[in-house]
Image (cartoon, rainbow, N blue to C red; front, side):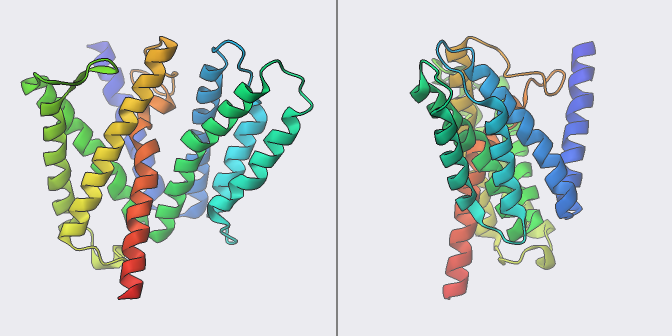
Length: 274
């Protein structure tokens, strides 16, 4: 019972902070909250990578590089994802002088952390610039559909989806999550006002947005489970008591955010071309 209360309490705090940082639509608040989460997520990734024999990533430099890319994506200059190019060059050059036994392993994991953790946060900042309620909807779609998948899978799940990677996931749960995503998308179309919907998404597009967020987010969950199974760990860290680490909490968002941004940008291009 105590663990359940702890999980519920810190889960509520987590959701409240995330929602508030997005809804207030203040770039400074958003940057501060998401920078902290990004730094912790990168630290988790590189710390876990260091457990693998021969891997010694440049942790401080890689974290600074990921934060620099994220903040540059939010700046008035808005260099976007081009911010990663100088960071990759710096990491490659500094590796020349480290004299480590496995430089290719180090570089692979340094780049991997930037691609797996920092890049999705940059995508979130880009979604925020398209409209803060699009980012809020993205998280709500992920949370609601994940909850629906868990509940339906717990009650009716019989057919395993990927027992090798995530034994508890079932196809019945996926169906439940998909149903909840469609409902959440339909509700978003009616609840999000025109002023908070600059791309003028209709009901159908809101539902597509919700489904894409759920489907790609579920794959993100499986990817993180694959990493943890390979490392032989239960949680990626201790970001929230009862919830695990940052990578545990944001696993769906890490793969879902780039897909969500791609969909919104495609809709924007089509709208401008029409």
